[in-house]
Image (tube, rainbow, N blue to C red; front, side, top):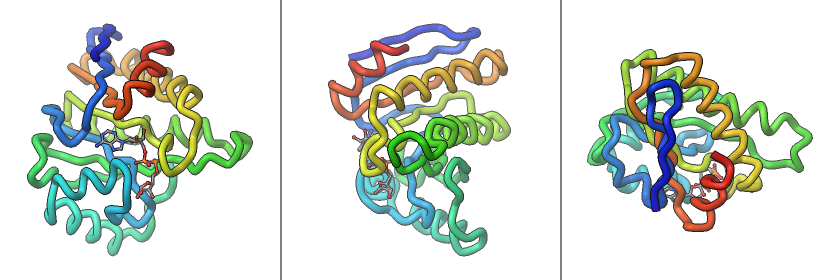
Length: 179
Ligand code: AR6
């Protein structure tokens, strides 16, 4: 399953699949503030990337303390096909009245900004916050796609491709209906 649109000369792609297998320069991790492997997509990324990812993340945690919600940091990709992992922390869903949409948008923007300043031109996102953190998928899809679209339009030429990798067919269809 694949869906592609063009935004300001960049490809905005939706695929159903596993983010650890994507051949892009950087993949994004939906991390926890302590940057430990945890479960979900984070556990999968740390497992596939191996100790280089987990140790680099632990070192950043040690130096900087817990990562605030909406911020992003970068580590090598270790054994992943992607050279880099950008770790961000999405908001925990608390009913939608605690600034969740703005915090989720900030998480996406922080990743895009970090990638752009590093010269990374292809980037893959998971559906941040919609697993353990409980953000409703349809609402998260709207925020995610609007934020990425606006960023690509504001920075034409910065990216060749931004890809969303949706783990379940259901999530893929939800994103595809919104894009
Ligand atoms: N590839 C792509 N997407 C995946 C994969 C994968 N291999 N595995 C899971 N997903 P979650 P969150 C999807 O819970 O809600 C962790 O324990 C999953 O189906 O991973 O931001 C961290 O340590 C869902 O659609 O992230 C944090 O404590 C999406 O990834 C907490 O969970 C996000 O689900 C973060 O929670």
